[in-house]
Each structure stands twice: as C-alpha cells, then as structure tokens.
Amino acid sequence: MLKITLLGTGATMPRPQRALSAAVLECAGHGLLMDCGEGTQAAAQRAGVSLAKMDVICLTHYHGDHIFGLPGLLQTIGCQGRTKPLYIAGPKGLTDPEGPLMLLCRLAGRMPYPLLLLTLPPEGVKLEELAPGWPAGARLRPVPTCHRVESQGYTLELARAGRFTPEKARALGIPQRLWGALQRGQPVEAGGRMVQPEEVLGPPRRGLKVVFSGDTAPCEGLEQAARGADLLICDATYPDDRYTEQAQTYGHSTFCQSAALAARAGAKRLLLTHYSPMIADPEEHLSAAREIFPQTCCGQDGLSLTLKFEQNE
Image (cartoon, rainbow, N blue to C red; front, side, top):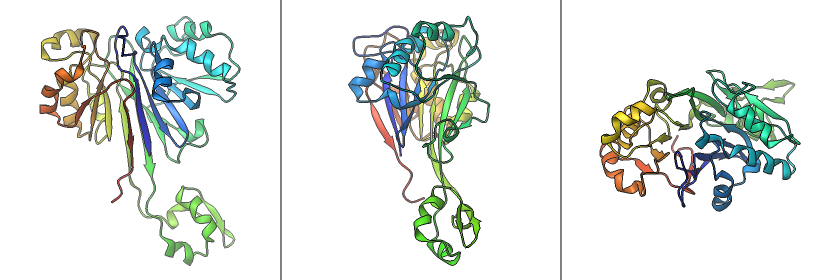
C-alpha cells in the first residue's frame, strides 16, 4: 500500500491556498519528500503528514520554488531529535560547493543527524539499503526530464512477490512461523539448509509505480518512465494550448500536453500540478485534458490518495 499526499501544487509564487511544489510518498512507516518549496512544513501540518519520517528528500532541480522550504525543514527535523541519516537526492550540481543546495544547507546550520547527498544511478537504488524497513524490492529511480536547467523526475516502484504456496512450504519442512519471512522475500533456514523465497513463491506479480515529473516539457524520458504507471504526477504549468510556445520556451507543460503524454504512456491515472499563479481554479481548464486522457485529475494542496496492489493479481 502506498499513500500519496500533495503538499504544494503551485509554481513560481504561492497563492493563499496553494503552497509551492512538494509531495509525499509514504509506505510502511517510511517516506519520500518530492521537492520542498516554500510552505511545505505548514502544508504538511494541515494535511496531517509527518515529515520527520522522511528518508529521502528528492529534489527535481534547484529553482527557488522547489527548494526554498529546505533550510527550515532541516532545522525542524533536527529540533525534533532526529539522529538517523537523511538523504537528499538531486540532479547534476547536487554536490557543487557553491551551488544553491549547498548554500541552503549552510543556512540551516549544523544538524544533529547525518545529511547525505545521493546521486542516483540510472538503475536507481533499493530503498531498504538506505533505510531498513522499506518493503523488499522498493526502488527509487531518476527520470530524465527537459527543463531550462539540469533536472530530473523520480519513479518509486514497489515490487510484489509471487503467490505463496503453503503446499510447497510444507513439503520442504518449513515451520509455519517462518512463512512470513519467505513471503517478504527473505531466505530462511529449515531442514539443515537455506530455503530461498523463489522455492515457495510463484512468479512475481504486478507491483505499484508512481512517477513524479517535476518541471518539464513533454519528453521521451518521462514518457518511458510513465509507461504502465499507476499514477503520474505531472507538470501542468499552463492551462491550455494558447501557451504552448511559452511552455516550450520555459521548459514546462500545458494541461493537454501532460494528458497526451499520460495517454501515450498508458498510465492509469494522471494528477496535474505545478500551476502558474495565473490559474486561480485548475478545474476550469480540466475538461480539455480529460478529452485526451479521461483519468486526469487536478491536484490540490492536501489531496491524498492510496494505491493498493490489485487483488486479482
């Protein structure tokens, strides 16, 4: 089960009811924070989300509307007594001593916990290797995107093991108390040998995949990442095709462009976000996008949804 909460859906500058870019993905008591725009902490409190449990802050790029909430958040987490490591992932420039991120980290001051910078390889990382407790096989991957500066989106994938076969476990003499470990993908010792999960599990089943675009024009990298995604959270800075040229100039997308990308990728659901301040009510511009991709919804601050594994799988 994976819970997604949008904390900030605005671009450039906040509006009274709209903080700047931020979203949280939570699973099994752990979490990822996608971007950390101005107003993230207050938005999290309104939404009932604990940012203290975040293991990785995933920055899509280093423009102010995506990172200016960071120094305050780092200080708050320290005041709450955090001692376990906190990772910050980001595109090229992450470790630049004079880059925006390092300057913000210096503003936050010395932290009582390790603050670790994470450059993701193309194949991503297993989250359980960063923070024990994530489900086995949960993976965070970078997504190449197209903006005016170095940028990347992110994919969170939750793997799902094959069906457990009790008959096979009994035939191998595995005590029932060890079945849970095998179902979680962990080998167990039984009958004088190590029994591997694949000996009692069927073929892997379909898991869950969420893609967060950050700021981007439509691009092949994002479309590839969104193939078959359960949820695509995508840039929709501009409301309609009158702004196509402007979107291309500044590396953003319109409502309809994001809907078309979701349709081509075969995503199951699309959440639009990162609205220009000119957009007072995103719902007024939704119908055209839904004509292209009916499963399009307008994200709003505080919106929360839960994804579950398909029961018939």
